[in-house]
Length: 137
Image (cartoon, rainbow, N blue to C red; front, side):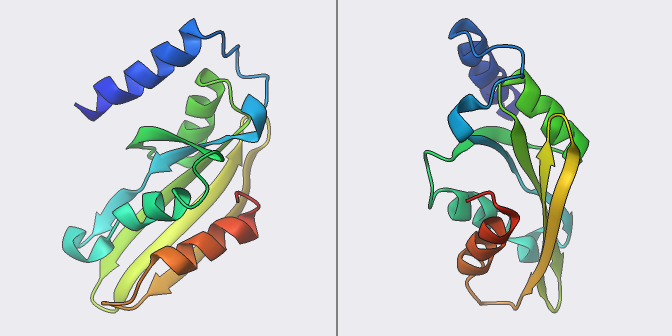
């Protein structure tokens, strides 16, 4: 089902004349859903999207996870955007480990942040700060 959502977004952008990926998409970035590693119950991947929602005009929700920053960059190109954010949420006993990567369509990975959030702690604030450090917010 998630693939249908991503296809719908891509089709809507293509029909709206989003271009071939050379544009900047009005400064927006493609935000991939976080892929899950480790213990899925401890990973809390939804926190990445919640952090992105703090700037709704900045991100286009891709609707599915990107397995790598290069996949995120290719998806951004198809959507007519210049940059994308890929994320991995890994569930461990000591907490959730997040790896967030900013990737450019032309430049590849531009920066990465990794953070650990203890079990029971709010992950949205630290993720928002990591996106800000990357220049994604």
